[in-house]
Figure 1 (tube, one colour):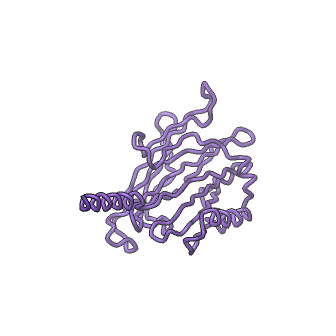
Figure 2 (cartoon, one colour; figure 1 turned 30 degrees about the vertical axis):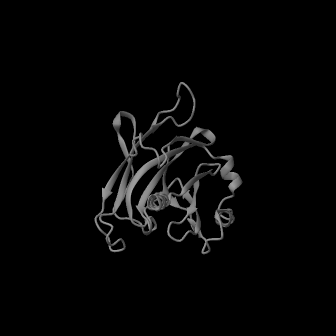
Figure 3 (cartoon, one colour; figure 1 turned 120 degrees about the vertical axis):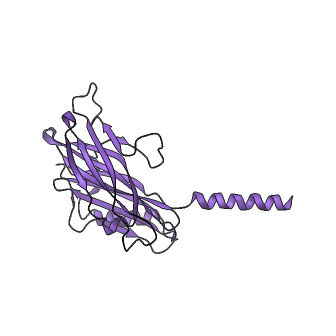
Length: 238
């Protein structure tokens, strides 16, 4: 009986350990500037391996799909006793110097579609949405397709195997496609990526009715204890 109890305890510990492998950052869309020219979002979580809290904020110029100067804002605690609230507060204070949270919150836009990293029934590489909840729809649908690209093995990721980039296109009228991103290499900030999935589409209609969108892409990358999930965004205006 004692042997059986020990075996059950060992199995429970193994399951618990496996359940904690890797970390998936929480996504928080902050919003847009009033004119739609800036999109901002936050990711945060507890780093696997170290147990340190982190919070990252991204501020993107939607006219060029480039980061604003002095961004992203990246905060990582160096003490396990310091929690997420402190990391997020520090990132928020630094981000307020770029654009106030109040402006972003007042122009949050709408999460037109979302595909969580835990979703298994949806197509992770394609998303089609109506940009806003008007029925019958008055806007053309937004359709995006993502293709993973093998970029081979790279020096900073030994033993991982081929890392991946991605190509993202917007499908327009008559099936005409517009390439939004087409990776030729992997930025250092992505670590050692092994996969991608379309996580969501955020839309915003500013003054005059012009639409801005952000395609939220989940990056699956090699982590210390298992696969990690982080977020990036590709933006555009119509």
